[in-house]
Picture 1 (cartoon, rainbow, N blue to C red):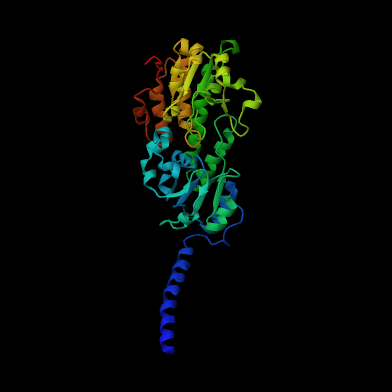
Picture 2: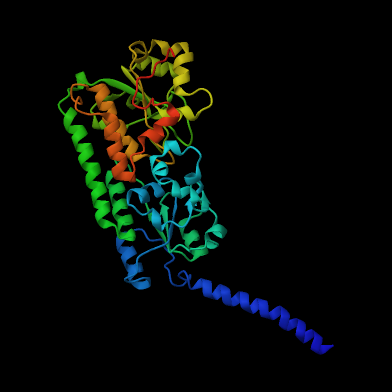
Length: 389
């Protein structure tokens, strides 16, 4: 009887012992909790220290991105081959709103490790066939699992950086590109992107620098996405293309109590927009994702909007989506060149906005994807909208 019990104990112990061995072996695939600092990596200097200690002379081959727009920056840096999993946003059926996803359909073939906006799934992350060596994470307090906790629970170092923008937070964006460039060992590519942005913006500003304030056309950009599609009254303050072009954005007149405290997004009352009556209306095509009440439909059906100066003069145009899970920097630049041809035709007569957009997409995403973005829109991007059709 005793021998029988011992035999059973051996049968139970053996698989447990094997499982323990497998777990110990797998733990060697990533740094242990004691090997990484409790604090996430926030600067290139901290990254270099970690790299020298843990992976000297070894490139980072496997990683994941977390937070809105991080995989877009990775695309710009030609780093998608390092990704072993993506966020749910990169499997979105509305890829036409994000050029980088159209240019890189292989992202949809990767497993999903996290829901959007930092709602990370640690179990999925730890079960990936190729364990990531680093997690690239947007530095947004209050978003999903705190980075310190994510690092503690996974044993994987978390590199934090901000997204920035191409207006007031340009240096933050450039700093993040340099930081990511260092992690990917693509420092030269990071500098190429920064120089490209600087030259494009400088040229847009140069062409309109001598326009007097009294001669600046008034414009409004409606249908701007903000955590989803919206109608005409959804807009953006300090819209970068209008700033670069020295045009008047009527939304900049919005009083502080109407603004979203955490962003430049705002919802404008219909009566206010009618009172402003801008000379030109630009519509973000992302509004067309709405099954009803899109900005274009509202212009056609709401009587109040028929008195808008832009509507009366037929100056309503369709733009590329300004944002899709954060700002589409490539689309923002492409939109600016098109808007220049509309607002200042004498100063942008040499520009074909569609060809210019294709050049921008090709440089930043590796593919000139305009036709594939425009196909669902029946070739209406950068066209005048016919509201009577």
